[in-house]
Length: 154
Ligand SMILES: [Zn+2]
Image (cartoon, rainbow, N blue to C red; front, side, top):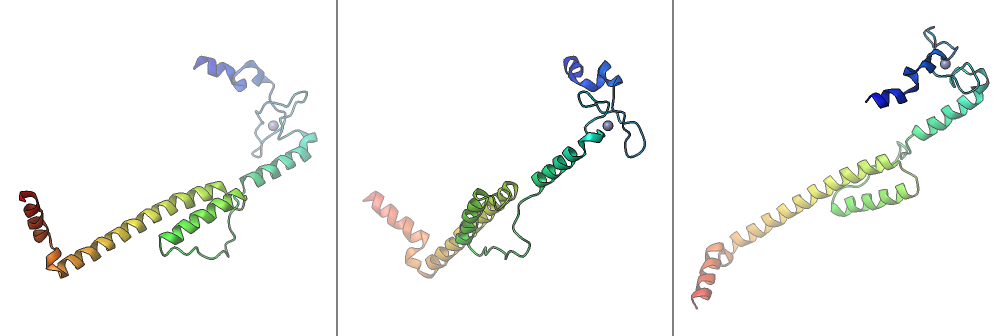
């Protein structure tokens, strides 16, 4: 912990030489000056162009690449649709058309949706099978057990 503190330049004796600029609220800037200057990067009079370029680069970097708001809703009626969306999203992120963060969210939500759809499908299949078994007494559980007993006792 004490080693870490020593490594931070602001708490060393060098902090006596802070930037000669002042902040928006009029207080003195306490940032470290750039090498060979008495101003920090943000207050250095000769760094205006560099500052603007850095801000623009930062702005572009932080801007998320997403589909336009006019993009139609993805069709998500069944598991096939969900699989199609996941495949499409994989290709969009590979082409840089969509931010990986958005693709991650689509992947996560798409996975949940797919899981829910498959669970619903399984439930409805079981319900269908149960209805069929009820309609045909010969296939009911009790007969099945009798058949098994007969088979085991020979
Ligand atoms: Zn400054």
